[in-house]
Image 1 (cartoon, rainbow, N blue to C red):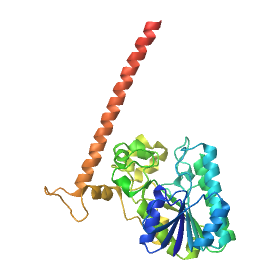
Image 2 (spheres, rainbow, N blue to C red):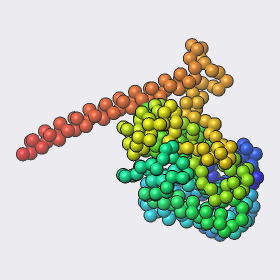
Image 3 (cartoon, rainbow, N blue to C red):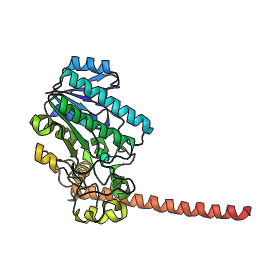
Image 4 (tube, rainbow, N blue to C red):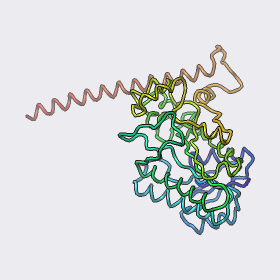
Length: 348
């Protein structure tokens, strides 16, 4: 299948385009700057220009389009700019796809559309699934709700299959190796300090699993996916302890329902994707960190220690560093407090 991916140079786009190529698709990427992606025909253009998008579709003649292009992180730009940019890009691209008669169109939304992380929010049920009410509380989330509604509009008015997916906190291959994630800290740091991962309710998604999901969506019967929205995430939580043990301290909004999230159970369910598409994530953080420590062909080092043990050691080391940093921070706050007290005393 000829697949055009917008936002192909982004964190998710890079892995998704190459993953789709690996699944046998002929892949085209569109972004302001090419990323040098192997096996991908990259085109540079401003996706905000309707004429440029129309010309691209006329040239590529894709069977399917995956729309990722957007300001991808909440609060990373002024709210007005995020809302305007994301909704305008989506409408421009999706309208052009409908006009060109593209057979399948899948657009990226976000789990943030349900409104978690704001005062007063509480889940209607756990684990969270697609039936949960939408309640956006920032411009980024509102822009994603608009994108989902655009998808539903075209599902009602245009031929083919139109859908949206809500990828969880995307982690690319280089980030398993230690590169900073989209929030600026590493995977090991998110595991060492539950407060970091709690912001996104401990959700995550390997970018290569996102590519496998898109491949499954593209291959599914059109009537099974037309107008549908899917959560796409890992099958475990990004945490070294069960969410049932963490929620009271780090994610109290989850409430007592979270006591049922024992073991490695995640807060977000991907049961719909498994039921409709037969897709399940193939990767988890334990396996990926272990793979960074030991080649996959070798189960243990010369001392008989497994790669899994090495990964656990890495997380423990990160936890120790986080605790040391917190201790140093508290000491500095104490010193600053003493200095302030002395200054106030001397000026009375």
